[in-house]
Length: 507
Image 1 (cartoon, rainbow, N blue to C red):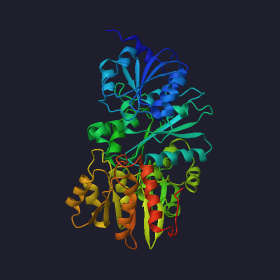
Image 2: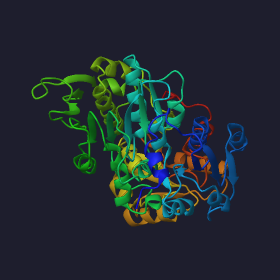
Image 3: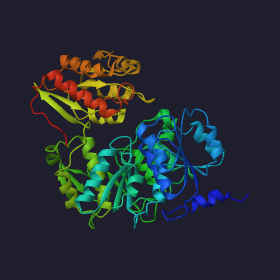
Image 4: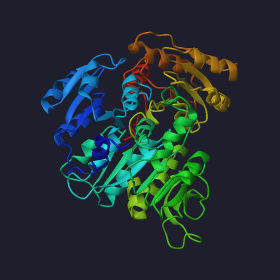
């Protein structure tokens, strides 16, 4: 049976300057990513139908302005307008489950399903010579590593854009008229899953790539740990120079071993231990590069020291690991060690990432609201000796039993928040039955953090850290992790009466 004409045409669409005119495309979702897809395709001359259950009013109003059509309704069934439209391509926004009715309909009908990353790679030559891509994924630490890598590239004099799941859609970066030398692309497991749909192979060929770590997360979306791992592994496909992996996480090493890469691509490990040749690591408190130098079997290049990082609030073990990973990616791109070192003299973490909010009476109040899964919370908890832990939210199908069991011996108390606290409370009952566990049953969003902070203050003692590291998503009671963190910070300020000393912003 001959291949359908539309499939042949789609395969040939590998440039901004190809003939996209008149191509019928359905776009699922109208968030930042969905709008960037619709805007790009209409600019290319395609016929675009946007399907959205919900959308911001401003974006909904702009759909018609850019020349697309919008169907806004419940998408639990396939809209008749979509069937009549007969799309040749469906571009799905991150977050639409693989078994979503519209996605399932498209696949059953033989319609190609892309994500925004696939489209961005195909049209990356809009403003001239395409930027090199450096791709970053992992359960925890993606955003910090992306920001670090991009900052190192900029320090070296290159035009680099952090983009993707970090908040700036890749398509917006691709269409920026100034052009870039590098895109440092944060990729979620959702985006990678969709990228791997076309025959199980990714079209993207990054200069360097990394999966920082792997732990159970988003299992409600992927359906199993194996499917989640398979999605993350897509990041290494077709890598040209360096596949960077975590020596402390065997899953990332096996991903590299199994990946189909460009001939000559190297495996480069990072870790907090002494590195072998072709690795990055730590020797006597010094971060070193043993990968990108001629005499790597007997020598190493000094990047910086843990002591110097501590002076900038960057010495938590998981942050040091992120720094090593970013250094490996930047060095793979030809950046000097000096540029890497100079970047670290001024780099600061994002808000809500192990951010010191206040210090009073020898108690530190730390906002790590960005710890939205157990893996991230595990790294945060491990950084402090005695913790009053504020925990809870949307667990996304993931258990926190191992997390409670692992850290119970250095917890002063736990303050449990979240609309459904039963799983969290049960985990403490099983693995820390003698620990003081305080349940916050406030129903209204504005009351949750004041109550949690008040109760934490009652049990905290000198030398303790009150740590907001929820190990869960925030959307049960808050808009997002930033909203959760801001309310925590406001509650701390109110509780301490504005008398906190040594207050610090992390940036």
